[in-house]
Length: 396
Image 1: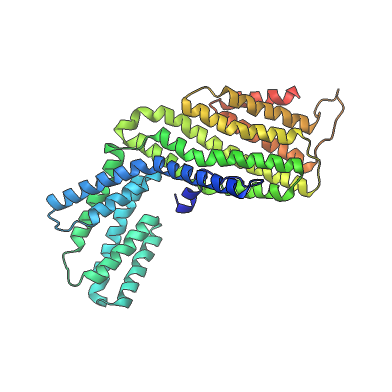
Image 2 (image 1 turned 120 degrees about the vertical axis):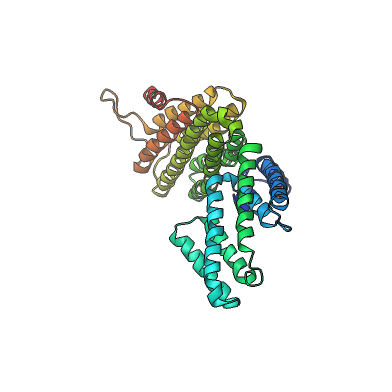
């Protein structure tokens, strides 16, 4: 997760209608909450990195006879830091990058010699080969970094290549072992904490959208749309955390018993993401409705407020392990309100009432799809969630 993402982890405070002192107080509270969230999420990584660095240094110094084992602990820390993604894959990429950098450097430096342009050529060739092999970021970085080391230090130190590769291998294996065997992350806790900077801001943005619709304020509606689009980096971080959690439950014996519960969280996260993408589509359609001066009945903003309320309600229920009945009731009540906003359709015995324009009618479908996915996030089966949505639609 980037520093920019982390700084926004708990969502920015809303400043509309506040005095300067209130805004400063809200921002200070936000900063404290954000840093607390970061410490809770990444605190274990600091412990893992310290343990891995110590073990890697000890092994390289005591068993490999390396008097200055710099690369081993450095590599171990890098592997631990990769825990918000596929750590095993990144370990393999790192070692492959070291090997590739060694191969290119050892092959070319006897012909080129040492110098500034030789260093640049070797790095270009090493990274170029890594790109042709379709390597990821770790492979590219290590291939280039190793090539620099070989190009600048290899001539006076002919025995550097083998220790560097061995040190990297030791550090990678130690980092992997600490992260998966000694002190693995708690999958469920990690996912819940990564979901915090997604769910809270999404709920706030949806409430802002409802307010914009009541005021028919196109500018605020467009800001809400940009806010929902801005959640993409946080959703990507959540996906990385899910990959890490799946890897831990697959490879770490201490976490094997959590595989079944992680399956539930995996399904929930996927449908939460689909629901939020549906909310973005809903916001886009309603923004278009405002641009086209279409009618937006009061029931629609009320329904959006209910969907927004359901997000933190559902999160709290999951955190304490309680059945999320309240969140489901809020979602279904919102579906019923959207039906009222649409008007009577599909029943030949009842008069048809046009209450929405084209974009508004499309937004109804987006709302129901988002509600359906959020019901599945709450733990319902797909068929059961669909039946409840249809039942709520029929009630209006």
